[in-house]
Image 1 (tube, each protein chain N blue to C red):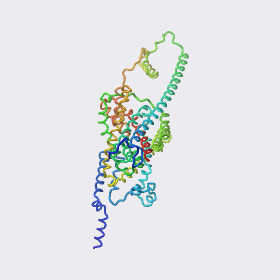
Image 2 (image 1 turned 135 degrees about the horizontal axis):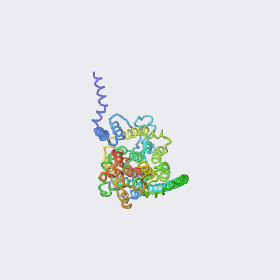
Image 3 (image 1 turned 90 degrees about the vertical axis):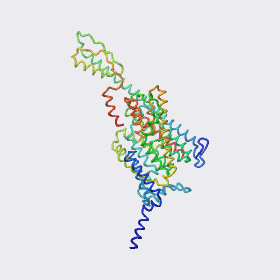
Length: 139
Length: 398
């Protein structure tokens, strides 16, 4: 008992490394290896995010081109003035806008137009929250 | 008639009862085994391993059972260590427990357990938030502070390393390192490691609360990004290559963990994936628990060293938890409140118990806060971190 912690250069009994060497080497190496892994995962994440964005942009461009082609193929309504494009909050996908607009149109027979679309509030809704609580409750 | 009584007397003299009377320490060990069985069955303290360990302890301490021959495995002072384990003696004279213990001694069971753990681990939260790795690294502080404590209490370097690894809160890693560096302490270290792992929900919350403010505990973290299947497949391959090249001593632990995970994520080997995560792991768990329990004899277990190990194990868990939470606090400060420091405590491994503790403590402060998946990142990072620390300690002392 009472072995000096940092002054011993080498363990006399086992000829092993000193306590300071073990602790410093251990902590530094653990951090260094995990930091290296972190950097590589970050790099991998950045590569995959860029690839996903490119894919999404390409898909969006193809979709727009298809829509434009379809619009050109349909004859214009004679008297009706073109409706103004609805104001959509950032982050709401086109599919959601289309689904909501279609729901309004099917309910009111075309009397109303979707002018703007904004999220009601941030965070989980009551049903979503209830679902998460019931899933994580056993933990 | 006299011959009859003589025979009866001989039987009584050779019975376990007579030997217990001669050496009451056996009785103490039987009581300790029964207490551990109680903890495993009634309190459900890591029952999958504590139950076979405790029963192995019971069997090994029934006088006269001769269930294991530790003299074939441990070189006495002054003997040539290269002659141990004595394979010829084990194969010719050994029994079931001797054969099973070979799997521990040769470091076979812990990597196979890691294979099974790999099939059940989702590295998605870690890949999604790579900063979790820092928390997993910080929680290894417990290993190295306990190493110092053990040295101060008079343990040798290899013994102190084996005791320190309890702080990794990873049973197979603790057994792996101990079997390599201090096999004579295996029983005490395994019992301490698994008991404290079961006590994580009791040990961690007070430390987490003391080291964090109410505001920090209420931090709601952003939802994690979705990780693609390709990323999940690349991760185990990349991890194995990098860590094994830097630290070849960790190769077998990390390699088997990642092999199991690759089997899961690739989705092309469903049959062997299920076997590794279920039947194989269950079989190895029985072998490992029983053989580790059999190594505990009164003269090695009922010592001052065991008391020190139990005490140091607690210190290891406390420092590991504190290390993770403190780095979590630092990350919270640097990111202006984007990181909840409570997830740092999950860096001590003990998957998934430590992550559940983060979730519970966080939800107590804010019922709408769900930290479980955020805490799974540091939790699995802790498994990698403790395997890396194990490799470092084996490299330094073997």
